[in-house]
Length: 402
Ligand SMILES: Cc1ncc(COP(=O)(O)O)c(C=O)c1O
Image 1 (cartoon, rainbow, N blue to C red):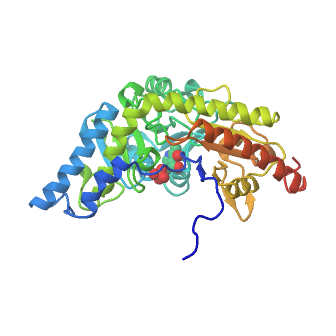
Image 2 (cartoon, rainbow, N blue to C red):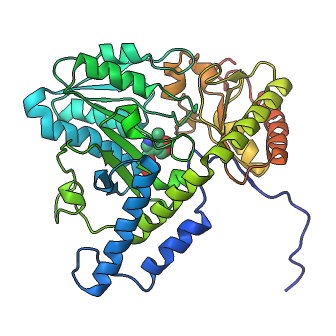
Image 3 (spheres, protein in one colour):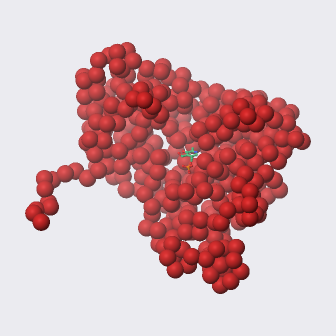
């Protein structure tokens, strides 16, 4: 058997909550009955089916309470990506014939929006206008609306950017779009906003709003699209007509129950956690910049959701930096996709005008409920050491000339 204690190790530190969050115990508890005893299909009329239906209805009510909306306006999907797809594709499918084929998106959208718009353009007969952001990562609401034309079916502007945490003035953009073309549907991807911002789609003035459970301490593989009452979308998953015909497929009852519990909890904790994480993110940013004065703080000077601390380090490479941090037990992210060993700079940072060489040295830390002040102090020291190590180990050529 031997001695399992081994040498003292520091526990791993998870600073990648924008990628995903752990499952909240309350969410797990809400899910368990539907993974075990209560396995019925919500569409069945018998008692087992009714139990499952009640769980889905309860979760819908909980989400509706968080969003201040009617329960029937919520469509459960299998992910935030699917919610974004349903918004764009569903709008074009339903309204394209009558209203046109033009789509407006911002340059900093998640790929679930950008790649969908791209495919709609490549094979769906749509034309797409991409609206840029400024150096802080802000999309000007009037510039966004100015891209809207008489034939614009849907315009999509995210609420919280997943790489920088920058918050867009979606309410102003939606109002400006409405003035320009009242028939254009306004969609916002609010996947990173749940639990970080107060979420009232009617106050935002949008028609469609996407959510994902696993970004807010719920399970993976569940999302939702809020569809303003009176807005009709073409269903993208066709079949048995579940979710009022907007999303067929037997409901993920356990996942939906977990989402409902997680959403209620996220809203309950939102203000206190927001203040705490905002302060911690500031502390981390201050400490990292004082150790590495040439660090660029991404999204600096813009309104940002709590818990985001983003950097770009000159003469550094994200993939190497993440590997060194990982070895030190710190999980962070680069905000850049990595293919064939060569890091590709993030489209968000490039849209903000960062030099590509600088953007390949990006680091994103996203804090969560378990993050403490000690954690961020430890992270700041580890980041400083890791950046120095990467800079001293790699030749300038590998680092894109610094
Ligand atoms: C802003 C944003 N939109 C959409 C998604 C996709 O959500 P899901 O992972 O549930 O497909 C993500 C996840 O990274 C995101 O951050």
